[in-house]
Length: 447
Image (cartoon, rainbow, N blue to C red; front, side):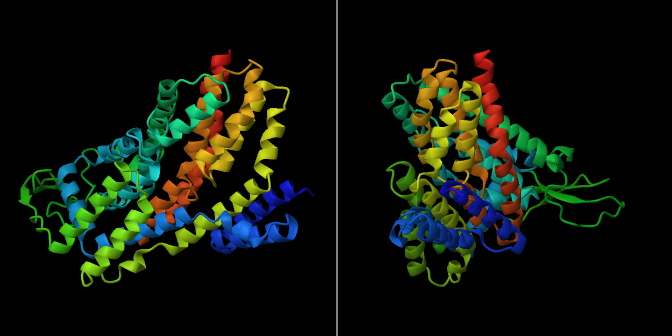
């Protein structure tokens, strides 16, 4: 058995064992990386450790710690209360509002994790308030963020366009952006249809925030915020409007926390500073200056998600280091059927990117596609768009940075449900995204 086949087989065993025995996949992946690297590939521990994603580690720890502080001192609850008053009784549009808001930072140039790290904890708690499926909320945030991935001013867009120019291929930044935008909006519609059934069935959102109060007429009564600080009491015969409790005023720790979060956002999105380092620094400073109100915030750090994410990435980095990913790509590019080769390259992009860096995957596979594109049987820009979409549509898996952030920042009671839901969706995208992207951007333009 070749080392490439063995590496893939071990990866499959890691997932099988982790599912069968409910063992953290990251821990299994770290052991697998050491075993395959040292015993088979002749790679030293120092080289294996180089694949450990220190930046992802700091990002996950920093963001979950920061919002742990914000949760402990009531800041998150205050923000959710304010947002609930704004949303009122229009919960059906909330997933699409989150989708659109998530698209803004990446379209403006920020990396996906920057916006998702801030929006996910607030969006998930807001959807919890309205009894909205947390998987729906998570996927809408992730794919909303993906809308701007290939904006001309986004790093991913710049990587793809610069790689094309370096390889002598003509690029079209606006068409790349538009193709990715259209694909993710389409996915947003599919996600809402699959996971938003309960929302669609609510005639006037009257069960969004059910209070459980008995209705003297025998019907159900629901308290629904009307967006103006009052609560509409609805039921079989209820039409009255009851005043809601007034929003509490901000405390000093909450004001400081909001200021710290805004500094993190500004530093990451305006000045391009590392959001993980910023978040960790902000969390530590808040713990020092508000020790009583933030007590216990460290317990909010999602160590299980950190281990999962870092272990899987370390193993895939080993496969890249020993050349497995590159050799598979070269073999596919040499196929005599250009359209089939184009599809397989998209499939490889989705599979690898589900567990590794999307930017790294695209940077490796675009040059491998050059011999295929040189034949003239495959539309150049169409294949590049299909590759870009395939490599990023799978980012909803809990093994990607944005996917892991949604799980890590979710309420503890929802984490397993979100993990399972986005895992199923993300793994399905390994097949669905390449097929759909290949049909839309490669096959149809070739006819």
